[in-house]
Structure formats: structure tokens, C-alpha cells
Image (cartoon, rainbow, N blue to C red; front, side, top):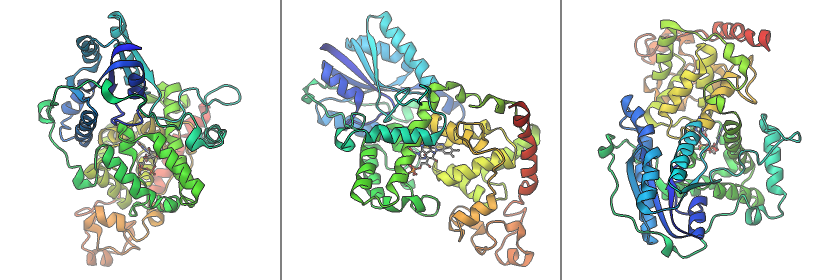
Length: 492
Ligand SMILES: Cc1cc2nc3c(=O)[nH]c(=O)nc-3n(C[C@H](O)[C@H](O)[C@H](O)COP(=O)(O)OP(=O)(O)OC[C@H]3O[C@@H](n4cnc5c(N)ncnc54)[C@H](O)[C@@H]3O)c2cc1C
């Protein structure tokens, strides 16, 4: 038993079912809790003028709830603004904490930061202890028969399910699914001084959250989850239609750990078992397994943060120069002339969320219609998505670029018009985000440039004036992409 410890919260902003907090409470007599608003992450946002960042606001609001919950239990959260690499060792020394407890973070920048913090602590006779918390299986817990990490999803998923179902009653007995319930009384939680830096103190301003339906904190996650569980049985179908409330919207909560992934997996398994999950619960569970999969890929292949998973794809010659930059800009603004793509980008720009189907469509459009390096789009999403997560975002972009593990084959290219007809058949998603197109019929709304002038006039559309002409023609772009990707075949 150690004497005094510090739990350093990062992407795990909850007070329940928290591996590091549980371990600290089990092993120490006095447990301090802290969060650092890390300038290594915040300064670049400010430098790019992103001072109304929804994520910073989400974190701030979630910390207020976490602090209140810890105070209710006799503790509290120390919140500081600075560089975590130096703040944490300094705080540990100030508090006399011999051990700092954290949960694993698999991103390369975070592992480098944690290594520095561990070294600084060690130099001062202290230690950093890290635990699995944000995933069900991690690192090398699941390996192929040959003892290698998986690089294809379906066998990984099968192994994941086998490992879970190897226990007779997984929900109640599988070690990777059990909640970390505080084993001792909360008297070990050390009180914290009141107060935390305001958004303004850190150079940020509040961003719209609740107006967008984003309720932060553990309570926000719980309310969202309960609402989704009423709909989970239809998930497999409804999840494809961006105008329907088909998906869970749990991603931002998973990103910041305001919900426990173990709790989500248990609820999915229960719904599958008791029949309330219909045909949707198993598909939803599969999405959570994708999440584990991409964390595992990032851990074993950290180069994907910079380069293609499959090295031969680094040889692709992407479009460059002014035209590419102008087209990229049109894509970012939602002004490509392809309504589904544009509506999706407007949704992203205005809310920080984009539906999964549309992430696939817009990513494919950028890469395979505009011929632009997937990393440009990956960076743009990273800047804008509330749920931005390096592992999942990179996995999604490399899937669309065909350069990733288990990616879409390069010759399979989404048609943005047929995707629109299939997944937004009456155009209601497009109408919501592009009101200038709202008077177009369901027949014309997917490709306005194909509509006769009379019908465009009746709908109040002047192409090139109040809605753009298409920036490229899909069929021609498709041909160019097939050529561009030939280099893969020649070098493979
Ligand atoms: C180009 C691209 C970029 C993406 N970037 C991100 C990102 O930065 N952060 C992120 O969390 N997801 C990302 N995704 C995956 C997916 O689009 C989102 O997780 C999903 O849209 C979030 O909505 P939801 O919570 O309603 O999902 P649901 O459909 O309800 O799924 C439940 C949960 O499963 C996980 N999940 C679902 N699909 C995937 C997937 N394909 N890969 C990994 N995890 C998944 C998420 O944690 C999600 O919250 C990306 C996908 C693509 C194609």
C-alpha cells in the first residue's frame, strides 16, 4: 500500500468504472485527482483561430460535472492549464504523490508525452502506472494463429467475439467487461481546492453545444444511451440514413470517456441476449469492435499517423497546385456542386458531427473524385469533428483511400449521386443543410445539373449563382483515379 497518489484524468472524464481511479483507491491511503488543460494540444487550436472549439467546451463542462461528483464523495478535481509534461511531475511533487495513475492512451503523441512524464517522475523517485480502460481488448491481447496482430477486420471481430463468449456468462463474469467498482470507502479521496480555469482564462470562448443537442458529461452520455437503447433494434437499417436518428451519437462520449465502453458492450450483449436488440444490437456491437480494432492497429503500426498503412500507397501522385487547393477549399466549404457531399460538409462545419455514411461519401469524393491526398481531408476532419479520434479517423480515411488495412479496394469508387439516391432518397437531409435546394424535387435534388432549366428556374436555382456547378464530372474523375492508382499495381 502506497501513501499518496495522483490520478491524472485525460480521455476518461468519469468518476465510475474507471480503471486508474479504482487502482489508486485500492492501493493508496490518499488519492488526489487532476486534469491538465494541456497547452501542447490547445495552443495549436488557438494559433489556427479555433477559439470557439466545441471539444474544449465539452471537456470543460464535463470536468465541472466530474469535479462535482468527486466532491460529493469527499474529493475533488485539481484543474490546471499548462504543459502536462511538466505540470504532472510538478503536481506530484507538490502533493507528495509517489505514484501517478493513468489509463492508457494509444496515440503516438500521447505515448511520447507519457514516456516523458514517466521519466521525469522516475528522476524524482516517483512512478507512472498505466492501465487498460478505454477498450475491451488492446495491444496484443488478440493475435492471429501465427501470433501476429490482425490486419483484417472480420477475423479480428471473430476472435474478439470468441474471446468474450469463451466465458459462460460474459456480461457478469468476463474480466474485460466487469465494471471497476470502488472497493473501499471514498474517505481516501483527497479534497481539492475549489475553482478551475474558465474557458476565457485559457483564451477560448463557449461554443454552441446544447443548442446542437450535445449534452456533455456522464449525465449527457447516460441520457443519450438510454434514448438509443430504445431504438437499437432498428440500428442495422436506420444507421444508413443520415436524415433518421439511427445511430447512437455516443462517439463524442467515447472520445472523452464520459461513458465506459465496458458498460456499452454489456448493454449491447444484454440486448442481443434478451431479444430487445432485434437485428440491430449485434451490428452496433460490431461498430464498437471496429473501434477496438483501429486502436489496436494504431498501437502496432504508429506510422499510419503519417503514412499509408500499405507502403506502396505512399507512391500515389495526388493532385497539387492551385486547382487542387481551390477544389479542396470547395470541399471544405460544402461547395462542390454535389448536394449530398455539400450537405454533409455543412453539417460538419456547423455541428462538429457527420454521419458515418457521409464520412465515407465525403472522404471518397475528396480522394477519388478530386484526387486529393487523403491526409488533407484527415486533417480537416481532425480539426472539426467533436469525436475526433486519431485511430478511428485515420482508419476511416485510409479505408476510403484504399491504403489502409482491410480497406475498400481502390477500383471500388462511390458514386456520390447514387449514394445520395440510396441513402437520402427524398432529399430531406440535403434540404436541411442546403435550404437553397429545398424546392427541388426528390428526382432533381441529387444532381441538379442534370435537371432541365425550367425545373431549376421553378425551384429558384441558378447554377453557378446560388448553387455551384459540379467541380468535376464523376465519370471522368473516376477514370483519372483508376489511372492514378495503377502505380499500386506496378509497384505491388
Ligand atoms: C473518414 C472517416 C472518419 C472517421 N473519423 C472518426 C473519428 O474521428 N472518431 C470516431 O469516433 N469515429 C470516426 N469515424 C467512424 C464513425 O463514422 C463514427 O464513429 C460514427 O459516425 C459516430 O457516430 P455514432 O456515435 O452515432 O456511431 P454509432 O453508429 O452509434 O456507433 C457506435 C460507436 O462505435 C464506434 N464506431 C462506429 N463506427 C466506427 C468505425 N468505422 N471505426 C471506429 N469506430 C467506430 C464509435 O465509437 C461510435 O460511437 C470515421 C469514419 C470515417 C469513414
